[in-house]
Amino acid sequence: MSTNKEDTALGILKYIAAGFGTGYSPQAPGTIGTILACGILWALAQLVPSMFNYTFTAVLMYGLFIAITFFGGLFICNKVLEKEADKDPSWIVIDEFVGLWIAMFLIPVNIQFILSAFVLFRAFDIFKPWHVGWADRELKGGMGVMMDDVLAGVYTNILLHILLWVGLLI
Figure (cartoon, one colour):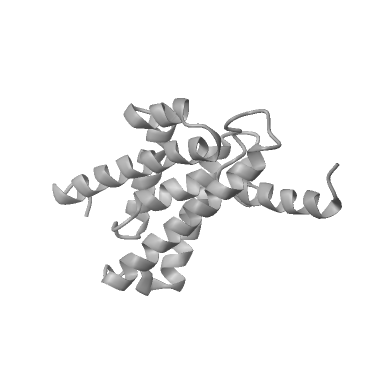
C-alpha cells in the first residue's frame, strides 16, 4: 500500500517525466514536448549566454546540463515505469528534451538552427532509422525510453554540423 508521500513523490516525477505537463497533450505529445525543449533552450541562451560561447567552460557547462538531464531523466523514467504497463508511454517526453538539447550541442542557438534541429530531430525520432530504431525496440526500462531520443539527437547534431560545414546553414 502506498502512502500519501509516495503518491506525491510519484506525481512530481510523472509531471517532470511528462515535460511539465506537455506530454499530456492529446495530440503529438512528443512534438509538444520538443517545442517546450526548444523554448527552454532559447530562454537559457538569453539568460546565460556565456553557456553558449564555445569556450571550454561553456562546452563543459552545456555538456553537464545535458548529462544531468539525461541521468535525472533515466532515474525518473525507471521510477515511473515501475507503475506503468506500457514500456514507453507517449506521455513521457523528458527524453525529447535531452534529445533536442544533444542535437543543439555546439550549434549556434538562433531561430534558424533551433527550427532546423526541431524538424530533423522529430524526423529521426518518428521514423527511427538505424540505431534509433534498435534502441527503441531492444533496450528496456528508462534506458529504452531515453536512448532512442539520445541517438536521434546525435544523428541530428551530426547532420546539422555537416550542413554548417558545407554552408547550407549559416
